[in-house]
Amino acid sequence: MKLPLWFCACLLAVECVMVLIFIPGQWTDRVIQQESALIKQQFGNDGHLWIEKQASTWFRASMIDLVFMLAYAALPCLTKHDHHLKGWKISHTLGLHG
Image (cartoon, rainbow, N blue to C red; front, top):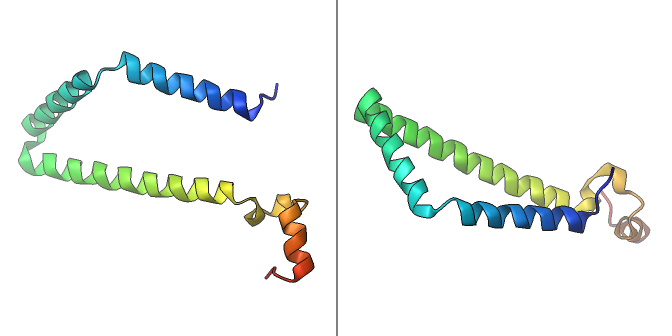
């Protein structure tokens, strides 16, 4: 069963709103502080700083990868299976392809 893109986008928007409504920000902050205190207690300050640095690095890398993946998906002329697109035909007609 193939769903239309607009339906998937609406479903994703509803899901995001539900998450924002049902998970309060202060609860999330409190849980992060509790987990941070437990990590400090278990691994010491050096271990806590290392874990925090690794998590930040992984998060940044995943966000950068996501942006590049979305940009690549948004430019259909870069994918080989989209040769039938009008823009692709125009660029080939004008000799703008590589």
